[in-house]
Structures are given as structure tokens and as C-alpha cells.
Length: 438
Image (cartoon, rainbow, N blue to C red; front, side, top):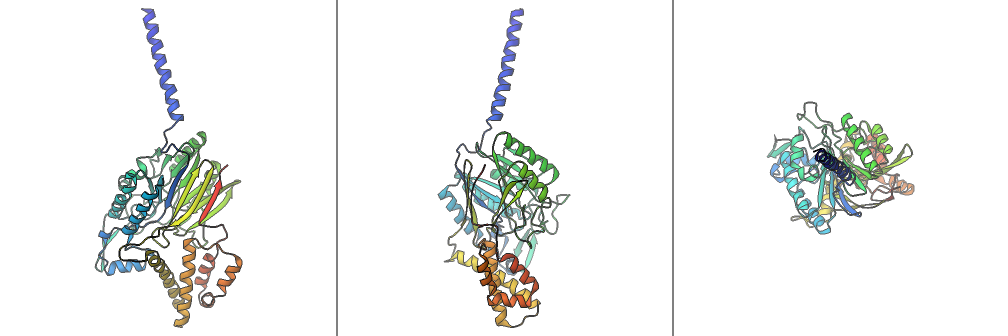
């Protein structure tokens, strides 16, 4: 009898040891999204998608387009379909969208965009999204009928998780219970953090307008540190994706764009040796590196996919090798023979409207001077937002000698300050980056 009891106890001990052992083994060899070392992913930001069912192209929608900061809103479905076709043909491992998926948080727009993105997951291309400040609890969600705007269902926090369940939340290794943030164990070398940096109303009910600014809330910060600690323990590099910025990429585009607690967050990223952060929000293509606690931290901001030149980033990772290249979505849509030129002119014209408005308000009435100066604003504006503003001091002198700049200098202090702030980027080239991580 004692012998049987002893054998039973021994069996129990063996089972317990096996559970503990294999449990530890599973934790150590955590299942990853991809098994291969070399991966490629594409990054898009701020598509501001609006579904065609929400407009009859009447007067109300025309007014919205005139105040949409150069966004192309008429051919988005066709444009996205062309982009998706390209992705299916070239087969990156992932597509990542860093917020402002919808124009103004229309639930229908989110659902229709999700239908388009489903084509990618059906082809084995993983899609990951995070919300921007225009996506959740946006009181501006509207349908445009004739000369009227009609309120429609906005996206709630629960809606966002449900609609985009297949684009991040289902494949998440871990997720934050206090935000729409989640993490993904990508492969044996890399861990990705997708962060919800938005500020929501305390009652989680849509207000008149969305909050532009962003922050990493306390409980979410604690969750982030746990994810970074875990990746460090597993000897993995972590890349971060969010909507708001950690750096002021332009002195006039900082308030409402840079995280409210950016300094605190950068300290955390430096502590855990995070090399790259991807963001959007400012609609301008820019790459910037600063050093925090002797750690160089690079932020890559993707321009808005809803404006020219419809840029997206192609990233190739292999071991410690990182390569980023900006690409543009060149294609034709519907009856437009040259869609890229159409959206470029759309954006330049929006810059010209800014020029006309500021100069007329300043008292300039000479139509020839107005035309010259407005055209100048449109062109310089396009260079900045497309990331083509990395120029020499001599090129700056040449631009400032142009008639358009001289007219602006003489007539509008505000417009001159704006042009001076976007005329030259000295950080580094904004369209490509190669790094080797230590």
C-alpha cells in the first residue's frame, strides 16, 4: 500500500514538473506572428477615408472639400483599391496604418474601409491599425445631403475594436485594458507596440469636435513599460507606432501635435533602447533624430495618404538592419487620366487659398502680386508636406530671392513666419533612412 502511495506521489510530482517545465518553455519560446528573420512592412497614416454613401456631391460636401486642407475626398475608394492591388502584387508581410483612418469618425466609413482592407488579410498580408484623434467619439461625424449636414453614428471605443478586430486586436500578443493599445510579437527579433495616444471625453461620449492633442495616460504608460521590459528580457528590439508625435517637426506644428507628456515618454523609450517611432497627425513627411540619455531616437512621420503625393513607407528589417524608403501611390482612377497630377494640383490650390486669404486680410489688393505670392505659397507648401524640403542654404537664398517671397515679406508677417518655418529642413533627408541597430 505504501509502495502504491509512493508511486502515485511520484507520478504527481513528474506531472507538475512537466507542466512547469513546458510552461516555462512556452513562455520563453513565445509564438510569433512571423517565423522568418527578414520582413517587409508598409506604413500609411491619416487616410481620412469617407465612404461614398455619405455624400451626394452637393453644396454641403463641396464646402467641406474647400476646407479639407487639400485632402482628396472624391476618389478614395478607387485610390485605395489601386493601392491594395499593388500590395497584393508585391506581398509585404504587413500594412500598418497610424491613425485617422476616417475623415471624422463616421462608423460607416470605418466599416467600408475595413471591407477594403479585408482583401489584404485574405491574401495573407497582416494589417494593423491604431486610432487617430478623428476616429473615436468624434462629434463631427456627418452625412452630406444637398446643402445640409446630417449627424450620423460615430465610432465608439467598442466599435473600433469590433470593426478592426482582424487588423490588430485578434493577432495581439497583449493588449492594454485602459486604451486601444496592443503589442505584437512579430518575429524572433522584433516586438511592435501599437499605441493609442488619443484623449477621450471622460464620459466617452462624442463632443462637438475631437481633441487634437494626445498623451500616454498613466495606466497605459505602466502597461508600455511591462511590454518593453518583456521584450528586453527576450532580447528583442521594439518599434513603436502611434498617431501623435514625440518631436516638434515644425515650430508652428507642435501644440496639439506633440504628446503632452512627450519628455516623460522619450525617457521611457530611451531607457529601453527603442530605436524607431512611427507616427502621423501633422500630415507632413519628416524624419527626425534626437538623443535622450545618450540614446539616439528616430521618429518617422508619414504624410497623410489623403493628400498628394499619397506617400507610404516601405520598411525592410533583417536582424539589426533597418531600411526605410518613401514610395508614392501612382495610378489612374475612374475617368481621370492623371490622378497623381490631379491630387497635386488640389493640394497646391489649397496652399494658394491660404496665400490669398492672408495677403488680402493684410491689405494687399494688387491682383498680379496676389497671384505670384499665392502660387509661391502653394509650391513651398507642397514641398514641405511631401518631405522634399531638405535643401542647402544656397537653395534657400535662391527661393527667398523670388518675387513671391518678397511680396509676402513686405505684406504679411504671419505668412512670412509660416514660410520661413517650412522652407528648409536641416534634420536629414525625409524620404529614406538606413540604420544598423546596436
